[in-house]
Length: 196
Image (cartoon, rainbow, N blue to C red; front, side, top):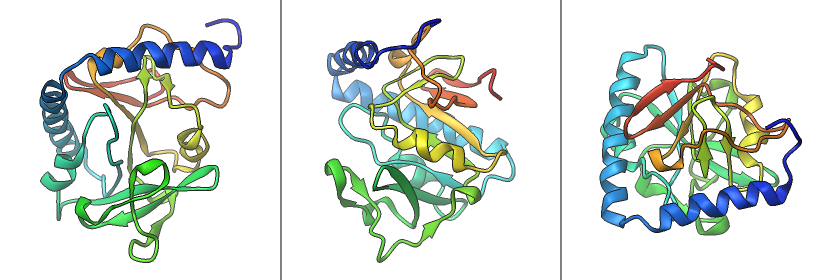
């Protein structure tokens, strides 16, 4: 969009997408999540050099990636985000069952148990979002946690937006601080963006 988007404009997009997600059946979203995890498992296996994967614990209607962690246990290391002030820190987690409910009632790592990992060491960052475009734009929940953290990744890290196909839009309102994705992953496939 040519003009700087307003907070209201972004919120209108979020509301439309959340309504679309809320109208879908939980079992259908579960099937989509399984299909997405299968596609991610294949993609990761074809891309050498991925050691540490930053993932997330799904909330509400987000794509659930827990089976991805389980399917790649022992082959890759996983880091989960922890809200820390106005940004995220990532912590190494052996198994998703180790997460505990924290900020915003989201499952998070426990800092006393799970060691932090530098964003520079992350090879693949799986980013949740409310909406995405195939051009790489990401619309988050509005707190800018990922937007403040993604610039800290090393320049070779994959920034992969993860969503269901109904969360894709032709365009989304973006601002200067919004970080583009290098890839978009949905149940129908994983696509590189012009950013890649």
